[in-house]
Amino acid sequence: MNSLDDSSFVLRGDPKGMYRLTCGFPAQCSRALEIARAAEIPPLSRKVTAVVLTGLGGSAAGGDFTRALFEAQGSVPFSVNRDYHLASFVGPETLVFATSYSGNTEETLSAYADARKRGAQIVAVTTGGKLAELAKADGVPAIAVPGGQPPRTALGYLLIPVVYAAEKLGLLPAQDYSAAFGLIEKCVSEWGIETPFESNPTKRLAEAMSGKLGVLYGLGSWQGVVAGRWKGQINENAKSMVFANLFPELNHNEILGWVQAGKQGVAKWVAVILEDGSESPKMKARARVTADLIKGVADVHTVQARGEALLAKMLSLTLFGDFVSLYLAALAGVDPENIDSIDVLKAELAKVG
Image (cartoon, rainbow, N blue to C red; front, top):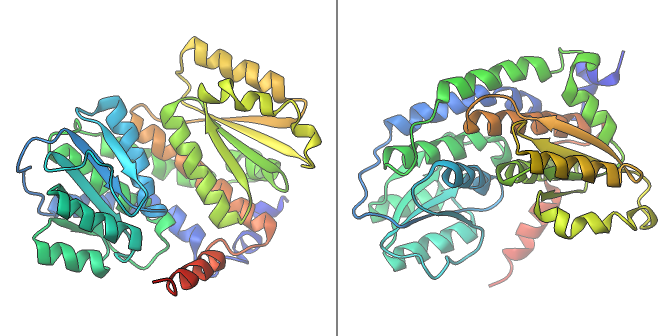
């Protein structure tokens, strides 16, 4: 029996239940939608010309996915801010989503104050903390989501309320939440520990990536967003280095980096191409030729999204990576929840005035 088929092996280093939280992702998305629908989201005070989501880490991940939806379906530009201050264009005709799972992210609180100073229209998404206090005092609408788990496991709570709010405000078309959530529920049953290694593609990919330096390639814009999410999950959960890029940009630069990659001291490389499955012939050719060019240096794998609508595709491909990251953590014998390095950094930053 493969070790990843043994629940005691997979869960031995997971005392905080990261695997359990991942399996609960479909239910979390459904609960997040209920919360968003019940929240008071007043109409826009004036027509907006742009939308910005400001946040960091797991709290910003939902913004990346929302940006992909806006690029495909939205009526105005959408950008994600990961800094203390907002771009100069932000003003009264900008809608700003301030998202902080803890409610105390210092960069987000600074950007919130910046948005208030600029007269932007604001919606907060948080579990509480200082952001909730400020929103209440300032009369800013806030969507309160449940706390008590690592932000990177709370993607549903940080994404779905933003998407729904944008939909309610007329900035995105109606989404098929039922189909998306039903699909990822099915995915959990197919990719969990109970599904044996031979028929579980997430376990097989984790074993193929274990002990190697991974490169994640998104075959297009939204696929690149998911590649970025995979990178963060593998970094945090498996405590392993991995890099991410996207087509077609990588074909104009990074593809040449592979020429000498075999001489750079890396024992083993692995590349994973994340795809929709319905890309254009040009994009499919880019993936095929790139794979042929690098196969002498790296093992190349392909993972295809499931579902019909974009939301379902993004969620399914993301969940695939979440399971891969947890199986990689199990193979490495590390606690997927532990973030000691981040805690050390935060403690040192707290000393800086």
